[in-house]
Structures are given as C-alpha cells and as structure tokens.
Image (cartoon, rainbow, N blue to C red; front, top):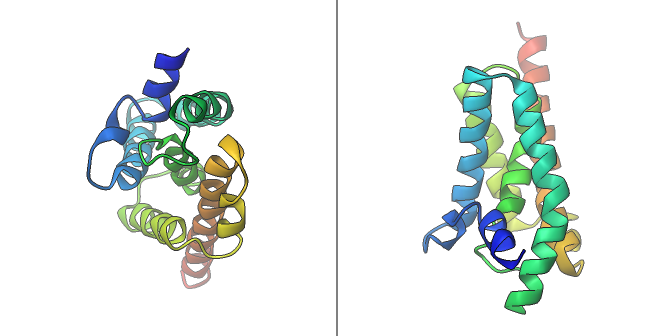
Amino acid sequence: MKKISKYVVSLFGVGFVPFAPGTLGSILAILVWYLSLSLLNIYFFYFIFFLALISSFILIDIYLDIQKKEDPSEVIIDEFIGQSLPLIFLLKFNIFEVLLAFCAFRFFDIYKIYPVNRAENIKGSTGVVMDDIVAGIYSLIVVMFYKIIMFINA
C-alpha cells in the first residue's frame, strides 16, 4: 500500500519533477478533462474526479506517515482535485474558459487567500486536500461569473 500511495499521490511520478509540480498537477487535470470530453464523455471525468477525491484522503495519510512531512511538494493529487472543480462545470471546450479556470486556480492555490490559508492549517490529508478544494471553489466562482457576464451580454 505504501508504493501505491506514493504513485497515486504524486500522479504516477509527475510530482517528483523538480519544477512546478503543482502546476503540472493542474495541467494533468485539464488534460484528463479534455481527453474525457473529446474521446469519451464528461461522466468519465466525474468518475476519475470522485475516485481521486475519495482515495486521496487515505493515500495521502499513508504517504505523509511515511515521509514525516506535513505537505510534501510531490503530493499533487490535491492540485488535480482542486483544478477539476471548475472543469466539472465546463461541458464543452472553450480555450478562454479553460485558461481562466487554470489561472484562477493557480492564483488562489499559490496566494492562499482566506479561507484557503485556514484550510491549509488543518492537519493531515484533510488540510492537504481542503486548501485545494477551497481554491478550486474560488476558481469555479470566477468561471461562473465570467459565464454569467457572457450570457447577459449575448
């Protein structure tokens, strides 16, 4: 179970890349979303998201116990989960909306604007995942505001 946790929480080793592993985790979420949307359907992406969400709490706790760290940079499944939140509501590919979701998520994840910073202080896997969920919710709000403005102006 220790090896499985290492591979899953690092998104099969991508988290060990020495430059911007969190950004790469976000890009992987976009890639999986895009491939799901274009080759399969959005329900496949929903399945992957919920599988990642549910398994992340258990597997991150296992990995944190092994590493004796609070939030190692190689753990990027949380970025995948957070970035997935605004993507869940994008049912067709629009490059501007995808870039907006990406930039908004990275902004909120990096700068830890309240309450993202409070969620990050929670111990264990809950804190590791929850700050990215809150950042994902913030980016979802940004994307939804954009979509509302575009709808009103159409």
